[in-house]
Length: 454
Image 1 (tube, rainbow, N blue to C red):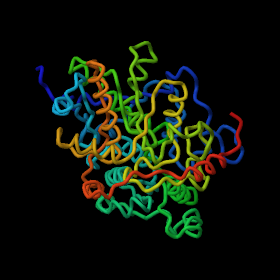
Image 2 (cartoon, rainbow, N blue to C red):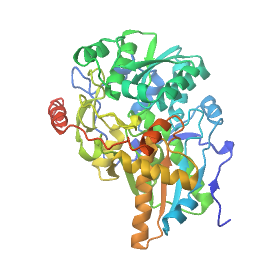
Image 3 (spheres, one colour):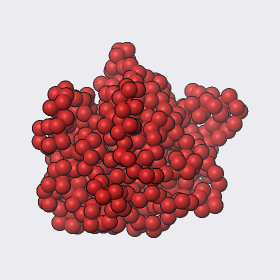
């Protein structure tokens, strides 16, 4: 039907395998290095943190990796997620472009994050692990791992970035409802946290700092493993279920996207939608534009340097070659807490370095304006992170209007904003201001990058 809005797959059409872009990169990714020796790491170096199945996925170059049946069974709670044609927004913008969004806010935790939380928890359970530590910014990842832990009988401790811990109490309550323990980071529970608090008792924290605390807990206790909600290769892998579904749904719509958009903090929801399409292109399919959208106050791709860096502030993680603002960079406390990370996924960074994807940055007021415009047209209130993708999609649709082009645009609406309404209240009251990072602090952070030959 010509006016169809939703394109929905049946449960038996949940993809049976994740797609691994590492199989199709035209140039191999740089090796991950040991923080002490600066030599390529092996599986044994990661065993204190992750179960072996996830380590093998991290280094795999197989094109497809099977999704375990118990994981697919849990996915049936919300997957396949809908692909929705934003017809009302199209009419509002008076654009010839067709706008679609893949809506990941239908998951129990309200975002795309359970796509990797569930398999990570399951693999840990299979390895006999009963406790996990992790970090979270806005709380979408923390609540997702808490949800997954509740399904598989795993205790979860979440270090939440202090500024988000204070800004988003309902995310914290959701984590606790699922049974997790939520700790404001930096905290007095770790050496890394105590060191930061000694210098700045009022530190707003950062994802890099929270990662340090979570990694420290896992590294010191053999009964605890670490789980990460973005950045790592196996997380990008798990999220590709989004794009694999979207490809099938566009076949139902008898359409095909020209522009594929996702917000980008660590890279997971962007990769989830874009990587399967990028793989088609690299294997001889048609060309598309892929746009990663980041906050102007933490512009990792558009302002960062492509270099080896630590994934955390206390330098406990391996060294990855990625676009980075420097591991000591402290972003200002803007509301898209899930995008306040100094580095970008090594896979996303590699794709950007090869010229396969574009990057764009926006200030938060313009993003919230787009989020409100979208909500009033389509009825869904986007998470602050997702408003960046909405902003870009609207701008692309307006470009099509100016150029008279009827392109097809799809973006990943990675989560709803029901737990982020204080940010919208601040926006409506004129209290939401655009924040800039400290140029001198950024320059110092980049100057302090590890000295490793390219």
